[in-house]
View 1: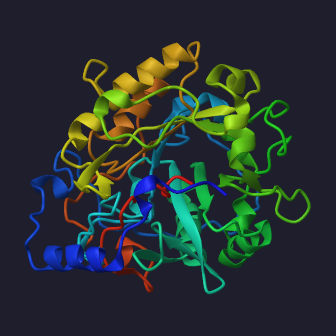
View 2 (view 1 turned 30 degrees about the vertical axis):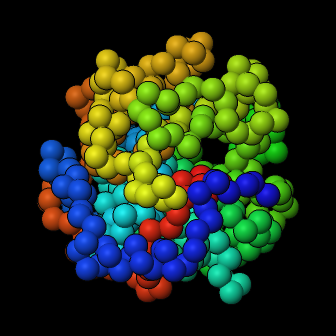
Length: 398
């Protein structure tokens, strides 16, 4: 069991007092709470007629984009930077009362349509049901995992997205067995897209296919779970994260403190050793700021710097990626997680790392309205927000 952040404990009375003050307007909302206006994102996505079967073989036509670019089709999955939305289900929008705990302005399918290809989420057990909850289901509940997966499955079904590879990173916060996750995947229907690597129980023997190879078999969903005992018989598409992936530190409160050192799993020893075992690097790049002495929240005041593609600004996404690429012997981060992905925009850094210039296809960046609390802003039903949880950075990445 991974230990929570030291700030995770506080009195309920103090929390409710803070929430009450926020609701009554006694705590000002930072102007940066609004989503980026430089990158316009749609408030919903339209689902066209889906493919007839998610198990049928497909052919990638020359010149067709894979993950929004034709140049990526022939590249191996682990030779691409997949830009990700950290805590993708937890929104700062009307549906959550603009919760200060929210990490994104737009929901998962909108993020996918904007070019995000990695969705991270924290999962808890709520009365026997797997729920997407931010630290605690009593504080920020984004609904059942199964419902969220169903929405992502519909996005994958859309013929417009048939050449897109999506990666999920789920945090098994309450140490539920693989069967619990397998049930949600099977019932949502998304399991049929689940990719099984050649050697799913070890990184060193895994040779990842190209995107076009994954598309040709229609196995376009890669799922990592932290932490989970791998089950090769019943749910082989649910991969143990720390068998295949290592992460940099996530508890960052100063833009000068982004690191390229291995933080997890400790058993890998160092980034150099993890890379020698063919583990894929995940670069955490999001920062927190203190609301009170015991409460940390996502830092939006500096988000345009944090998510900037600049290689010269301290704390910028581009600089962090360049530093890590150099530190790792010219190995680029395979995965990156950011907050408020529409700022920067973060996807620009991924494009630069991937060498994608000019020929980007299929991204939807029209419309500037916020989600406005509609059901498209997240999984409908079950979301409730009481307030900001102390130490929200403590569990969001476990």
